[in-house]
Length: 137
Image (cartoon, rainbow, N blue to C red; front, side):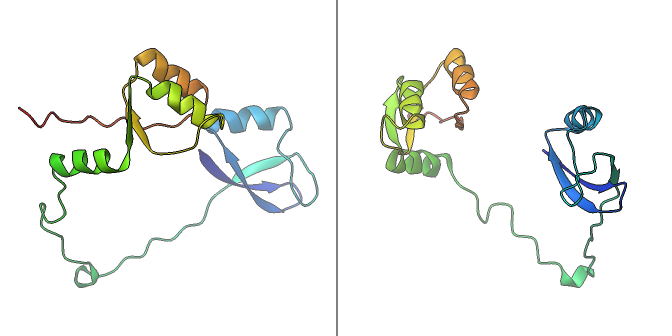
């Protein structure tokens, strides 16, 4: 996702959100981008303004030790087991049911094939793959 500051030929400034630069250019070429104030379709990208706060080195927080907030693999596995229902190889099926309100929405975990993952992505279902370490070895 990319956000552009835009201006019409009448000087009105507004913001446009696009998937990428190509999407902006395609919509601009077709005249699909219009000023929300005057409906002018002759628009151009204008420089965005932003600020970066610069402080002194003494203003910066001290770096935490690298292991201070480290999470162990055992803690991750414990959290997943305590907070996510294991649906095993039926993960894709359960995710689809929840997506289409056939089943109650809940935290689930399980396994899926590459083909099932592609199908879930195509259906617009978001999921997160977590490699779970084997703790018995």
